[in-house]
Length: 181
View 1: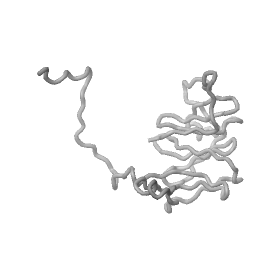
View 2: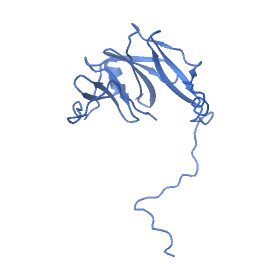
View 3: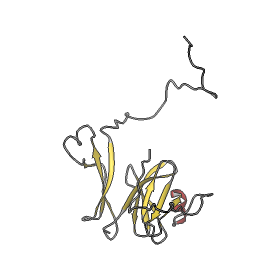
View 4: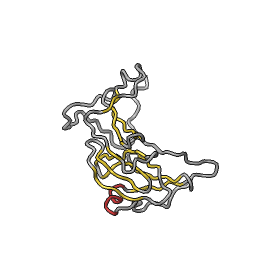
């Protein structure tokens, strides 16, 4: 019997209890929310999903009654939607033409807007960064949402390199996506 393996190098930490201020622990199967744009009404809508029952019923969820739809000026046919971060706040980015409007993702409160360079339309985010994309030039540009709101125009994070162009043979499609936590 060789016994237990030695611990990995470094510090081993065990967390027994986490103190949080949640009124209720969210159920990831029944508390999911997604955003969609309806070009017929020119509105951004939020849907509730119950992953336990919606897939079985082939349902796309139901409109979230706690969300007031956001009207997009001019009711364009194409609107980019993404989640991002303004500091610690999770925000909804609504990209229409050369402007990105920013809303609180929980309450729908308008937080401001900023312009993007011509040709950059698609918006996508991960937990750590937000990018805008240009399918004509096949480039991605990282942006800082907080700094962009303050400046009124898209601002790259400090120390960020120039726009990213994928290697030959790869090209960007019409939309970007991400999964902010």
